[in-house]
Length: 215
Image (cartoon, rainbow, N blue to C red; front, top):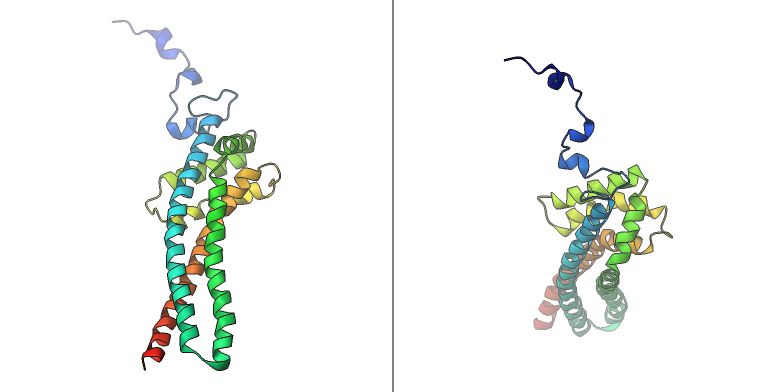
């Protein structure tokens, strides 16, 4: 059988090559197909909103712990101490309790405000990555790292957004909604850690104050 020379020697048209998902996902052509800029922007916002919902639930648990530990310890301290120590505790303990509880409440209020206006954030993400390869790469890496992470803790996942926050920080006035959302995500672990540490401190002092009252 004669060999088909014309078929064997025809060059392969680049358009005939099927690109893997990892290539098409980063495509920045003029057409926004399934893996275009619109899809990437929507994926990024979906990941962000999903993390916000989980963060809000976790912050609620931390808030309950902080209120119980701080308020309980504060009241026990007032009952157990006397004289100048009581006055000092009223001031210092009150400030510490307010700091712990207030930091979580403020974080939850920011999270609640951020959950509104998702359509605006999609537009802002698309504007951020349109024509800017570095910004697009940061968004792709953030989405891929978040969706493919084996560690689903809020602290670990929120770290993925630090690089994206740094990209948006220089253009904060142009991306107000996105900047606020990223700030809420990246500052939440610190606020929860602060409230948790102070709460455990009050819990430890509560044991001491209870012993003083009993004996």
